[in-house]
Image 1 (cartoon, rainbow, N blue to C red):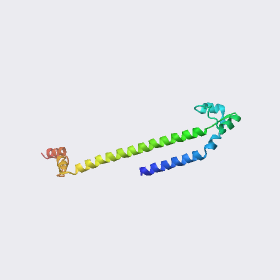
Image 2: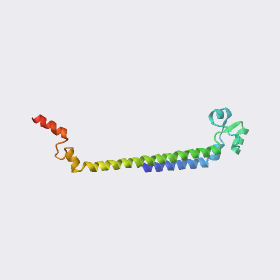
Image 3: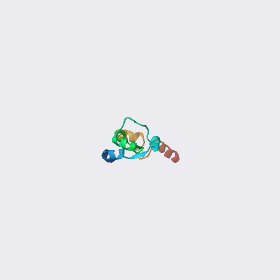
Image 4: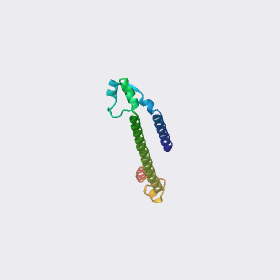
Length: 138
């Protein structure tokens, strides 16, 4: 079930990446006002003079997200997806290890030695309960 969710998330990531790749030029053509760009965009890269940014500069605006910005966004998404997959595998592995410990404990509880030492072999309950029952009788 968890592997199914992981598979679906990776498929969704691939679809989003495909959409970003296909619409990369259209996204770069979106122009916003310079004052909004100065407050909204984290850095100003004057060396990145693509045709989309030149088109926006002619209008006195800046590009919302350059083509290089779209590629960096995809790198970020793939890095997050990698660490998400890594954490899922780690969680799954730790869960399996814990279940193996429980199986060994369950196997131990079915031995005659364990049942006798805990007073369950005779069907009387624990040793303390047996002692309390004898005090009530006496």
